[in-house]
Length: 252
Image (cartoon, rainbow, N blue to C red; front, side, top):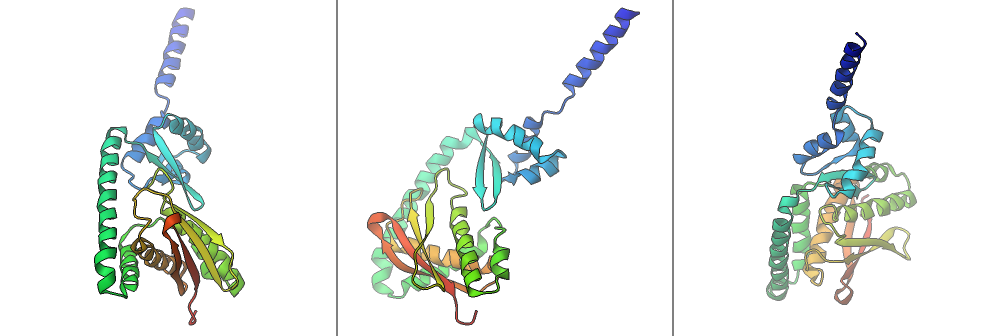
C-alpha cells in the first residue's frame, strides 16, 4: 500500500515538472512575428505573467544572443534574433549602403548646380518620407505639447529632439547618429550637434543632412502638436557632423 502511494506521488511529481510552462520558449515564439519588437509590459500582458517574470528570463536570452534589447525613449523593445538570416541581412545592408552612397554623391554633382533651392526640396522630401514611415511613439511628446512658458517649451523640446534622433538608431546594431545639445546664446532656440557614425556611408554629403532636417521636423511637429522648425546651420564634412537649429515659429 505504501509503495503504491509512493508510486502515485512520483507520477504526480513527474506530471507537474513536465507540464511546467517554458516562459523562455513562449517569449521567443511571441517575438517571432513581431517586426518592431515588444516591450516588457506587452510581453507580460500577452503571456499573462508579471513584468518581473519577463525580466528574469530576458537576461539569459540576451546573453545567449537569442534576443536583442534596444532602448527607445523610456521603453526597452525586445527583438528575436534570426541567426539564419544574419549573413543575408549584412549583404543586403552593404548593397543598400553602396547604392545610397552613390545616389547622394550623384545628386550633389548633378542636381545642386541645376537647382540652387535643392536644399529646400530635400527637406520637403524628408517631410513626406516621415509621413509614410513607421515611427515608434515617444512618451515625452506630451510634455512638449503641454509646456506653458517658452523656457519650459525649449527644455522639453531639447529632450524630445534627442529622443527623435536616438530612435534613428533603433534598427541599427551600432549607433548611426549621436546627438547632443550645444551651447546657444539665444534662449529661444536650441543647437543640436548630430554626428554621423556610419551604417550607410552618406554622412559626408550635404543632401543627407538636409533630408534628415525635413524628416525630423515633420516628426517633431506631428508628435508634439506644436509649430516648430529645424534648419541646418553648419555642416562639417571632415568631422561627419551637422549643427541644427531648433525653435518655434513666430505664429507659435
